[in-house]
Every structure is written in C-alpha cells, then in structure tokens.
Length: 534
Image 1: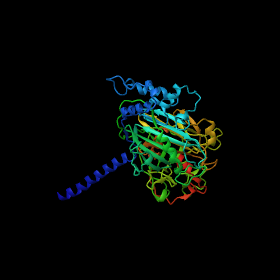
Image 2: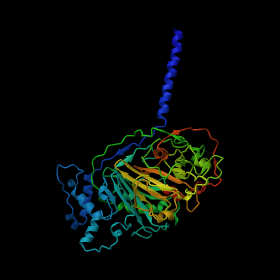
Image 3: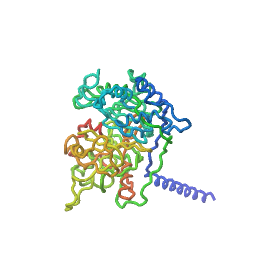
C-alpha cells in the first residue's frame, strides 16, 4: 500500500505541475489594456472662480447668468448658463472648447476682452493683449477626455520678462484631463513648490522630467500640468535652458483663467482587461517578449521594461506589411551595414528597444534612461520589382486625432482624445521640409490610416540615421505626459494588420552586441531635440 501511495503522489504532483505550466503558457503572452482612473470635476468651484474673474470688470457682469434651472442634472447645459455663455465668447478663438468635460484653464482674460469690446476696441487688436503677451494659440484641442493647448512667447515679449539667450519663441503646453493612466512610476509625485505661485496654486510642484520642466497642480478636482521642453543646462541660442523657461512658465500660470468647458456625465474607472487578439496564427510573424532588449544594450547595462500593456487599439503606423521592429543602433555582429534593408534588421522576430541606451530620461526604464520608443523598418523592395520604391513607403495616422508639430520640427505628435483615452503618439525621422509642405502642422485633424509622411532617415539632417520610423507613446498622469513602452501596442496593431496572431519566442541567449559600424548619431552624440521631441 505504501508503495502504491509512493508511486501515486509523484504522478499527481507531476500532473499538477504540468497544469500550472500549461496555465502559465496560456497567459504568458496575454496583452492587457491600461488601467485608467476617472476624476470628478468640481464645477461649482469653477463657477465660483469665474464669477470672481468676471467681477473684475463690472461692466461685463450682466453678460453672464450664474443661476441655472433647478432639478436638472449637472451635465445639462441649462444648469450652468454662465458656462454656455462663456463658451460662446471664447469658442471663436478656441474651437470646440465646450467639448471639454473639465474646466478649461487658459491664459485668456475673458472679462478684459469683453470690456474692451464694450469700449469699442478694434477687431484688429492682437489677441496677445488679453493673453499676457502670449501669441494666439498654436494648438487647442478639446474632447471627451479633457483638453490640450499650446501657446508661444516671442523673444523680447512680455513686460518685465528677463532677457534670455534662446533665440526662438518658447512653446508652453497645458493639459487638463478627466482621465489618469495608472502606471507603475517610481518617480511620481516629486517636485518643489514655487514661492511666487504658492498662494494661487497651493499644491503646485515644479520638476524637470523626461525633457520638460513641469508644473503639476490640482484645481477643481482636476489634474493640470503646464510644461515646457528644455535642457537642464547652460543657456544657449539654439536650445532652451530650463532656467530660462521658468519665468515663461510662471508668467503663463499667473495668467490662467477659466475659459470654458461643460460638465459631462460622470465617468467610471476602467480596470485593465485582456486584449482580444486574432484567433488564427500567422504563418511567419514572430516576436521576442516585451522587455527582451539586446543583451547589454540598455543604459548602465540594465535590461528592458517587460510591459505587456497595449495602451491603445491603433492602426499600425506603417502603411503596408511586412515591417520589422528592431534596434537601429545595436545589432549582432553579422549586421555590419545597418542602413541596408537586409539581414537581421528586416526579418522576424521583432525585438523591443524601448530601454535601449540613450541619454534621454525615461522613468519606465530601470536606469531612468532609455530610447523612449520603438524603431520600425519597412520591408525591402524585392529585386526586379520596379513598382516598389524604397523612398515611397508610407507612414499613416494610427488613430483619428489632431497633430502637434510646429514648422521645421523633426517630430510629429498625434493627440488622441476620446471618452476612454487621452494618449499621444509621436513619429520621428520623416523629413521636416516634406512635412511642412504636406501640412503636417499644429491643429490639423487627421483620420485613422490617413497618410502623413514617408519613411526617411532624417536626424538633424538627411542621412542622419538609418531609414526607419521611430514611434513612441505617451499617456497622461499626475506628472503630465510620460513615455510608456509601445512595443506590445505595436505587436497588437501589427497582428490586426496581417490578420494573424504572432508567436512569442525566446528570449534566447545572445553574444554581447556590437555597435553597428554606421552608428546613428543619436547614440554617440545624443541630440537634445530628439530627447525632448522624441
């Protein structure tokens, strides 16, 4: 009897272990949606502030009705007539401002503007007069998740502003969002107060992170972040130093007023869920796991970020398959011509390079530094195929959205603002002159799958890097827009494009990487513009 029991127990244990292994195998390559928290805007507080702001110009007070119909839900416009009236005044300058479910804070003094109109101010008077000398908005986009805006301050503009070495306009971004992405963030919540702003913004934090100086605060129960792209370095004519950005940001913050928005139906938090993937296996598409970067290619020899989140359901950014996600800076020793569309750079399996060594701040990488996104190469043209042109391989919008890009900039960012998402996608290495000519500029609305450019090799100048697309993803948090690993988002998008589920392989042991002979300059001499725009 004892012998039988002795034989039976190992069998049961073995069967149980096999069951666990099978369960692990079935869940190891599952992708998940992000967890998102929805906040509640305190609209009565916003109305109270608006009443004070309008009261600064007594002649304007009769323009607004602060008593709404009773027994109406807060999201009914008749409950807040003052907001409807405010949106009517500001919408000619900030199109669609009433779509924001959070109070829109902008450096626009509505009371001063209306008072000037009552006193016969000419229509030709510059809007900067009512915006603390900031130019008319370079970008304003409002939607079900909140709003994003960007304003610029010209060199020499603004009474009392200190002189600065930076010779270009300073761009200031602001976002207010009802949605917050719940990411694991070891650097969250840090920063220092700003004495000159403490009375106006008691909880404000200033900090430099991922290429931007940021001012994070909560108002009306809503998180807002003001940010300026800068370098934590000495002032220069071509690159804005963060110390020169401080006075501009503080001028912007002091000028903020309630400019619009309307209450919406209450939102609920969105838990992470398993992503649906194609049921049919692809005959050839394979990929290495998220976080499995080339050995020793991470900053300080750290590994990658094993993030299995598909942050949005997107259309794949290259127009056609096949496409290949690989490092453009590190490779195996067989690949000694990284700019040729041959070899391991244009073959499966894909490989993550989000945390590959760069000097750019990336809080999601173990070292605090990384590449910020994923490099993707198109398929090479087959030999003797005269219809395929290597310089005509298209890049498309991954979702319906609005473009964020000023003239001559190397990066184009797509803003997505929907009821369940507030996310940004950035494209790099397209030719800036071509993007300028094609109207890939601030405020342009694009549709999913719309062609927005061509795969190129621009990094500061033509032929500055290999011919590929750098693609990255940012989500909104209480610290503002943060880089997250786009690898799984891209794998999921590619599977939908090819109508087949990929097969995860590896990780496999590999020899230490050899830096490619034609090393792109973003590794040997990191471009600060890519670190902040990339």
